[in-house]
Image 1 (cartoon, one colour):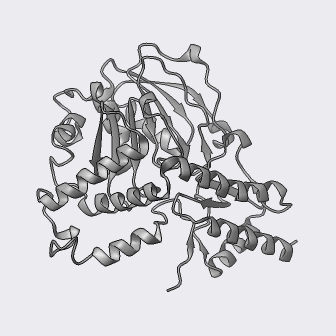
Image 2: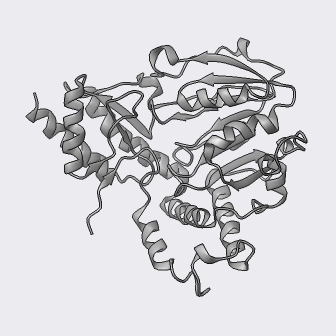
Image 3: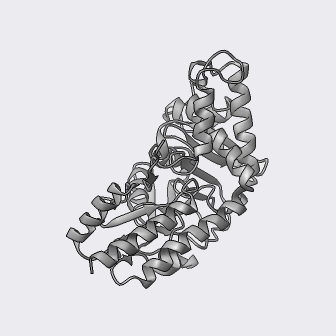
Length: 359
């Protein structure tokens, strides 16, 4: 069986070990006589799956006991609306604009109250994380919103803002479980699964208990955090199979040594590619060095035709999904947790060869 090196930004590469377990269990999960896809979400078997999945995520992220863990549908995009629907009580929130996803979140939040954009890097096509001045923070804001890693542009926060008593809300979709975070510094974290946790279809929300309150009566039932928290993510049928696979990924991560061990591996992988980009006379990174992502690495040659040639030849050699996002062009290598170090090394060797042949 030949597998390619998949550098897709999402849905993205999954650990082979996890996929092999899925294959082996697809017809009969733990002698239940059925697939997880066929199980009732009310069954003892699925209760075991979702309970263990939550426990393992709590262990991996050291989630304090006063936080709820929810497994929801609708993707991270639905959270752009759910956050203000549930948290914007006084009608004001602070946002930092660092890319396409924060822009969409800002657009949704404006439907529910006043949005203060404290800083933006849009003028430079989001190639850096803007410096924040605490004097501009709103002491009476309902929450303070950031996107910890920007998939399209390849930037990440290396330092979190100190928001005091204002809850920090983070879209962590593309770097959750890739580096250590102190969950207690956040009021709410959300992440779509399809980058570092599992297949598309489930979104994890980690929310501090004091923020789980009665929503405005006009907020639809299924968009209220309180409803999901009270029903252990099973108010309606959850995305059972996606949750099951996330659970397998969490076990794989724990076996590797957890998030601290994964962060070290990720830093090593990213360094291999960034070091080459910094030395190359053909390929150049596009992001301010201080804000470089460990997960998404965009780069260009400066020649669109040469970019296209590189993407085509790379695919022929088994390095797929390297085309940059349509809004920025060029190339992008997404090297999430499940991308092996060997894949990054092999990509760099191909890039060296391509550079030699196309001087």
